[in-house]
Length: 236
Image 1 (cartoon, rainbow, N blue to C red):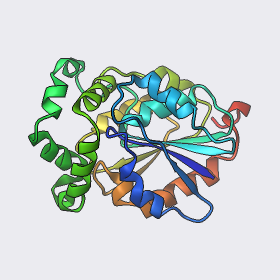
Image 2: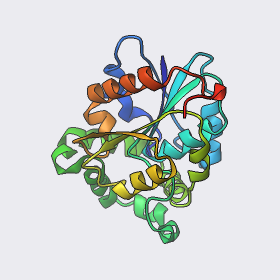
Image 3: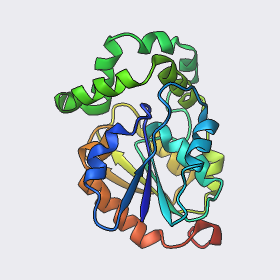
Image 4: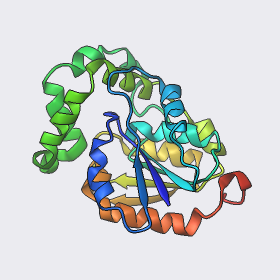
């Protein structure tokens, strides 16, 4: 089975390295990478991913910023899609909408937010493990692009689409996630009560901290519930 991995706010896909290395037999991970220097809205990211869809059965995995991308793409009911997996993400703005109007490009261009980002992504205990990777990734993506993604996330609401998706949905939740609050999961489950939730003792970078356990959860879920093309019905 092909797993299409949609990246978080950085968009590089670099953080998926451990997950790709840990992929079990029979699994083919495809890492999607967003442009590092081009400003897109959520529709632009959906179109970009749509151009990369395989012709064989596949699973969408939307991490953090890309949860709404996965939901919107699934709303197009692409051929071969078997399941949607969401990881530490949201269906609607996870913070106050007024945050959209902060000077994000200026703020994200300062050195201090890099340290803060490490804390929110990894927690204090994991910062030393991922600090170098976070610095490298941040240098690849301009503050202008990152700021545009923050503003997109603060304005999004795909709950109406989520409600109508004809696919089984799994949500992977890190219990120590300091970036996306538990409220986002509650809102998502209010929209789709049939969402299956698996919890892990991990921070926001759950797929990076617990790749083997995440693969086990995803494979078990897809084997049990992802055997039918959602366009044919019968999955809800």
